[in-house]
Amino acid sequence: MTEQAYSHVFDQSIALERTGDDRWQGRFPPAYANMVGPFGGVIAATLLNGVLNHPDRLGDPVSMTVNFAGPIADDHFDVVTRPCRTNRSTQHWMIELTQGGETAVTATVLTGVRRDSWEGSDVGMPDDVPPFDQVEPFDAGLSLPWVANYDLRIIDGGFDPTGKTPEQPHGASRLWVRDKPARPLDFASLMAISDCFFPRIFIRRQERMPAGTVSLTTYFHADGETLAQQGEQPILAEARAQRYFKSYFDQSAELWGANGQLLATTHQIVYYKG
Image (cartoon, rainbow, N blue to C red; front, side, top):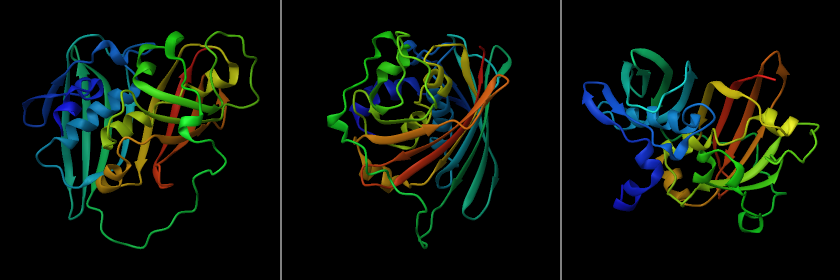
């Protein structure tokens, strides 16, 4: 990683100091603050960073599931990244973030050595969207601090924080996104971007209300070489909900690279109050 990358606010935010075997310590800066605690994407990326930098890691991330058990205060936290089983080409990880003696986040990660095989896709990148540079940047002025770290270009399905837009018939969105300032894509930043969408209920109701991701799973459909080819180019992202029911809704999304390749799919369940 270059010196410029180390100075990027994202890399500063996910940085961990190794304190022992399988153990790390970190602290989130205010740059990625959300409604309660830090932005969930940067929390997930931090936990993944502990796996990526573990000396025993085998292969690249294939999937990650993060369960947000409680809020994280503005203080140091501890992380344990433990490889619980290593096979010939796959490795299974258990991760726990604790603060003040309590568990705040748990996660599992599957890493694997990808081998040459037949390739195909049942879905294609949408071709009816305008290019990144033809879409107006989202004004993050009235949004939460973490939004300012992304160059968002919302094609449709946006959220109007002024409250002047009426309720919408669905919560689907399409947008271009990349780190701000621009940063070469890697697994940690892709993990964070997989959680970059405003809560679907914000889009549907066009109002801000208490909401937070409870569980997030991201599947990686790219290897390190593919992400390196993506570089600093923007990602096309699509998200939708299926149902809002008794304080919970789900979200499914796809993240597409500049060359039309599906980089990741992601699913989450979100708690809301209202």
